Length: 440
Image (cartoon, rainbow, N blue to C red; front, side, top):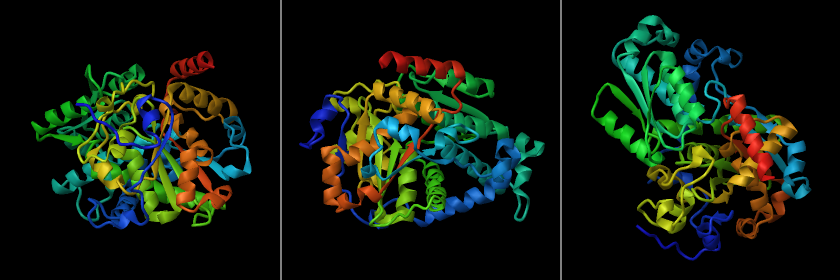
């Protein structure tokens, strides 16, 4: 199928696989209040409550969470040396931070917020349904040998390019579940190896991410003992991510950051199929309202959210439909077609999407490491282009004018969400740095 994208200032750049910014013409105020959406803002509160209730069990399962009493949290890091290296030294860029989900405990990526959440919520639900966990009983009992033996009768399955599979596999195995991860052809070998060492069955497909998910879903549908974590459709995954916005709000307040109409907040969120960035954006809109503007970022050859949302089609549009290849070193973002669920939720809530090339990902990865000792994989570096696009790019300037925030940019806060990297083996990270040096 071939799709003709409508006229848009970003159209030529998108089709030529050049870095660009697309702003969403449907973006509007108070979109989160639309009653026709398949979610309600109150569900973010429920997700936050779930995380708190599960915290003792998480602490019992993962010693690295002792210091946070079971909370899975990441640091908010203000840029100093890296800010200068990126060219964001001027006052016009306001304050620039990294939300370092690249160093989240348990899974080493933003997927800990979704994959771990869904597995643990399902485990509690299953245990209560089968009488293993009764009202008032200590939830930490689900880490006992009897509970592990019970959970071993069930399998958790997921389709993944890597990081979601790691988070689901780690969470499933620590509770005693069997786990199967269907991985796409672009999955990195070290992620496959790590999963297998955990006792996770890895099924590798000679196809892209979408096919891996479809195969995983098909296998799970035929076996009632398999619980499928559906990255394309899961509300649980999405809401697990959404709770991160409350964490961010507290950290910004602790840094003395005001977020309101005169002090806008910009979030730059790397996007694969869309669940993680969509969940974070939804949670942010729930907390900050019209004062926050959320942008997805995608590789120039894999801008699945951009091409679908730009097309205006109600049927999902693939990057292949517009002549792009879906080839990128950013394996977590090598997705040809976005989630229909996320597309529905984000239709009027997402400010826009910008695209980046692979060479820039490696350059930013190297700069982050050299200047502020931030360890990233290529996909996790994608958001660093955000302040440039918003402040200096013609479409960013037009966006600021349209939303009457141009005079507020010097008072704005930019948050670059980094999504993975701390679990990358040293040998692989050295290879990233070598590639960065070769690319200049």
